Length: 295
Image 1 (tube, rainbow, N blue to C red):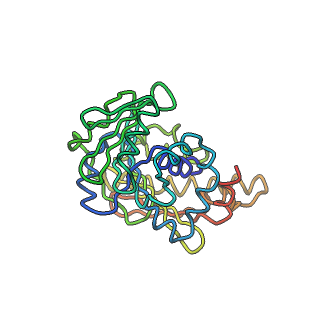
Image 2: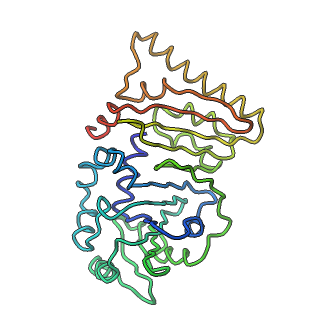
Image 3: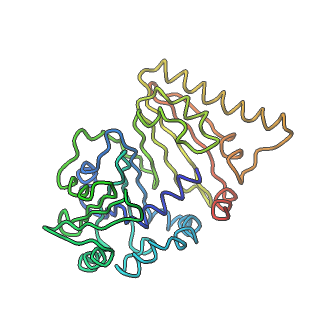
């Protein structure tokens, strides 16, 4: 959970990923590669209004030198200018679309200052590593396409709709992460402490995690789409059993679930089955959020 939240903030800020205030978000989202890629959506405005944003951003991003330079040179600051974000993470890098909040002339100048340049409307510049090449262009007025990839012209791929995009049913929550079945088979990529749950989802068609404010804290939700109702029933039972095992382990070690770490989050999970879907819910207390910014 910690890595998901921090990557969410740092990547969206430092790479200027996806601002979509108006227009057809579904059509724009189709430009991002998603067939075998995780897709993340962040409603920064909702997080600010819920009082969660300031807690999660804090000094983590401010310590990123590349982000500081980007803000100074372009005048863009995600804390002020970014309202909503979509991010796609295929195997070859990261792709985004960004609307409003940018000064195109300053972006061009920034690309040149960083050792890159612009030609035929496409700007290219080196990233922090040789394999991270940044490219961007204006799809239409106030809509910027950007990619971070080994391919210095990857951003141009978003000039048209992506091939074979996944159909993603976007949740209403302000933060959600949609994972295809291929990503669910890689349980070792999940945060420590959640891998038992990830292994149980290995044969599912897709999974969507979402986070929303709940009072002064947050709630995390999970929707897993299985191939049939039988598999969904088995998965729901596995989730419940895994949660019970975690509780028993703590009890055996004479410990209580701590709301400030993953033991408090994971042992509070509740699950139910709805036909081919499995739904899960976990409360995320304020103490857990406080600890995120201290580590």
